[in-house]
Length: 582
Image 1 (spheres, one colour):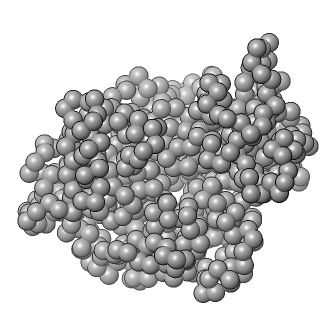
Image 2 (tube, one colour):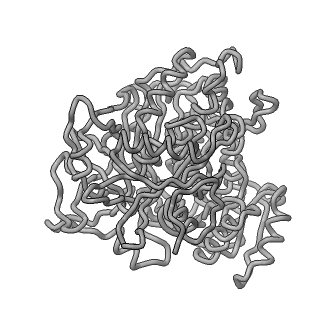
Image 3 (spheres, one colour):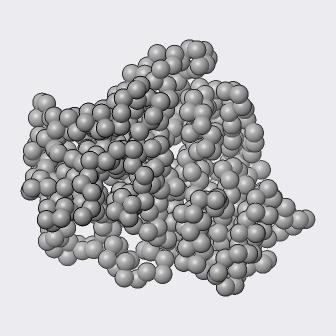
């Protein structure tokens, strides 16, 4: 068997069913455990899937996994690894046109002939697959109804670490989703890098002999942070996992805290918007009234990553949850992306976050100058088994500490490339510096290194250049979203006016119940005043209804798509101060 499969199955041999995975849901506000598997049970079911795949598909076959949140997905994913088949995780398509289009594109792009799912979703999925224009149409099979063939029919397959483990499709926040080819080496290396950040050696030794260390989360299983960070990390960390579906968390944010409290979780993880959503949902409620038994004193590691980490959110969450035991030093900001499997940099358990202030004018000109009173940025930790460089994207020259440039990454976690796209693979994964060092992954993200720590300032594609200033859209969005209780998610970008001059446009969602009799125009005026005061920026504001701003399947705002919809008149604004097109 491959070294990766041996590494994962070693935990089964050592721990058996003393370690477990459990999925929970919220029923009338109460946490209810709906399924649980010990590691030995999980391994047996994965071997059953692996044996079935080995008997019916050739080695290296790409197999699409379309499951709801739950343990059947994990057994199918491990079954693919065990059998040398290539898993392609994807969300179940729903009635949303964009979701259906995305799923069909993945099937076509990856050349999918077999889709694995569960019994409950197979009829609807089969009906949808039958209507696709791809030929031949993929077959769907329910892995929870495979028949008599059991785990003992499985036999290990010899595989090199360079073999493809799975295809991770990107979220598509700045471009169309691409299939990232993740090898066995990539996954093994990244799991060990994550473990080193979450569990320092002295803690790891404790965890090996304690069945109580547990992770808690709710992330989508078909994205890199949910798959690698949430579902697979416990196997590397000798731990347990309690998780819910993302839908359950969004509908009942308190469920996250209940998971941590009830199962005495050691660590948890989420993107910034997850913590922000939790904060907003608790804003006007007393925690004791919601659940008097909540206690977070068990939590020692709270990772925040997958998008820019906002210092105001870290501070507000820590203060709001302090009465039930949340400590600020458990924050662990990180940086990563699917093209590097997951984690690139991270904050070690117990270190706490680094939050520093920098002169705003200097940041806009490409330098990070620490000052006592300036723009706050959160450090995303130190490299986790990665070679991180800051590079001038025009000249490919390395930049000194404190200079903002493109983040380039090297190391064994960097993926093999994009599926079926050699040009994009060469462009993004084959970069060399002016001194000839490489290859590096060009992340497309901007940031700087200071005192060994990485600070991420934004996406190169999203950067707004305005009268010589480099303005990051997330700074505009942060000001707008915190202006008023009625402001929700938003997207900022640049649009040329009729003369060709760039202007800043902000598409802002509104929560109508929080307007309290005010007009959307009055809210737009308030936002513009705040932007002028804090960022010295004039912007055109378009107010739209809830859930109007396009998002990826992982919840990230899609600025490019928002701009395109605005230009094509895809919105029905509640207010707009953009000049009417001539």
